[in-house]
Amino acid sequence: MPNRKDIPVKSYSHERKDDLPFTLKTMEEIYDASEGKTDVPHRHEYFTVVWVIEARGLHYIDFLDYNLEANQVYFIHPEQVHAISLEKRPKGVVLTFTSDFLIESGIDEKFVLDLKLFESCTSNPPIEIDKSIANRLHLIITQLKYEIIKSDSYNYAAIGSLLKLFLIECYRSNDEKRHKKKLQFAGSIDLVSRFKTLVESNFKKMQKVKDYASMLVVTPNYLNEVISQATGKSAKEYIQDRIILEAKRLIVFSQLNLKQIAFELGYEDYAYFSRVFKNHQNITFSSYEKVNRKKYN
Image 1 (cartoon, rainbow, N blue to C red):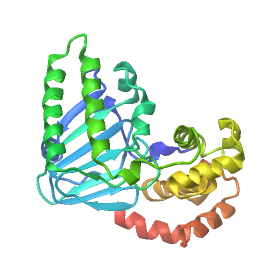
Image 2: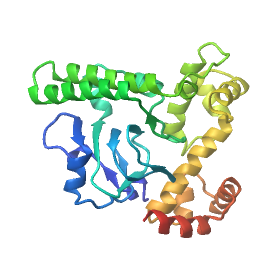
Image 3: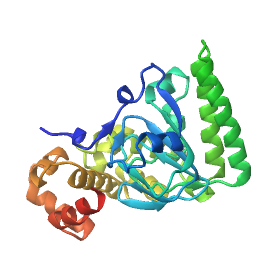
Image 4: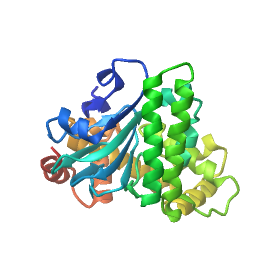
């Protein structure tokens, strides 16, 4: 049965000859290597940070288009589908790192996800940074370049510490409303994080709120209250949004048909899935496919 690999996936085995699961490249060298051509929409098997210093063009992330502007920072989760289209040679920095690198460098992946810079299935616009933050990021990048070249027994720890500092600076500069939800319930921030992680791992086989509530040892009503306050959506809506997003990715970027996509997402009745999709998107499966395959391919 076809799976998500039908969407092009970039892995470290294709990009690095050494064994350090962390890279630092400039947007300029990536642009030159591709001869300025727009890459096909794809996923990564790793986390990606794109700091745009100067650029003109568009960044496509899960069917949302963002105009590239100076001093933006994008955070791409491994599950997201994205592509960058540039009008001219850019200036910027691209950091990539794997979950394995986080482990090796002593960083809890939960720390990275709790910053809410990387969102796998919700709107994830870039953050805007001011001159003072940009100056601090430049210093961190300079030190990172040094540590990558040095490559000694403390290499992972040093690079990991600098990566954490880079992410913390970005977190601090971001809109407070996006990051600091004033939730009423004790422990709710951790609950939201665990719920999102569970949905990411299980949305193809688990679609009921009660099943997630059981895994999280809370009642469905309590889970709905917390998720609604944190995201503006009920737990059921969040789960369905994740399913529909994956459906959209497969419709546009894979060669699967309606029946195959429905089966891939846990629906044995593809006619029922077609109705679910239409009710959610206000457009039929075939119409969505026709419009968006032309746009993004």
